[in-house]
Image (cartoon, rainbow, N blue to C red; front, side, top):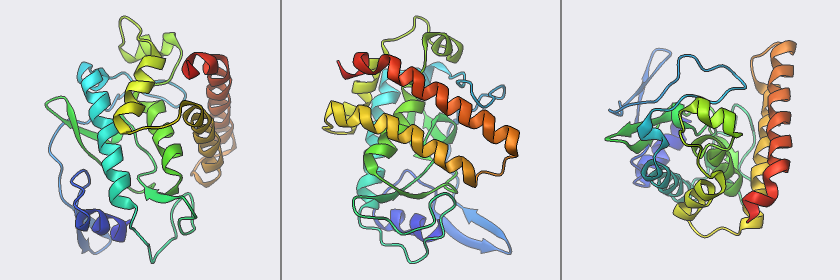
Length: 226
């Protein structure tokens, strides 16, 4: 992670903290000033309640642009250390190293606009479109109407419109490829559970949550494709 943050700094990406060094076993990073919309009542399997600024279309567009800047900055990165937490291998053909846990809870907003991502411990190689799809799940967010209401949306938005607004702000992406990447991102989330510090019951709960997401995605796939 340290060499990755150094690369992002050298590449001119301003949306990540700077790694300053170690003090004993403590990492020293720069502080990104702003607001992080963390829901204290969030539990696995639920959608986080989001403040109005994190639900806005302006924030959605700006987040996608920040993800694109991250991907562009990461494309030239050739790591010497590849013992990543979830995918301990070098980037394969077509992959780049990305954040690994993009979501509002790891995003710093300033004046309602995202300015940076924090908590880079899950960084690792990923297909950029799958990474974009994983981000779309959390920032759109992709969820049934009852979960969107619980997140603070009133009225409930058209998730397809928000999805393609997000993807369009990232750059041109074929719709059928993107919908397939949404499915792949959930399968990748299920695979990562084996590396998580959870017991058998917690792993089962996490897998059941991913299963519900995949079933719901199948039910709305044609709507998202349109």
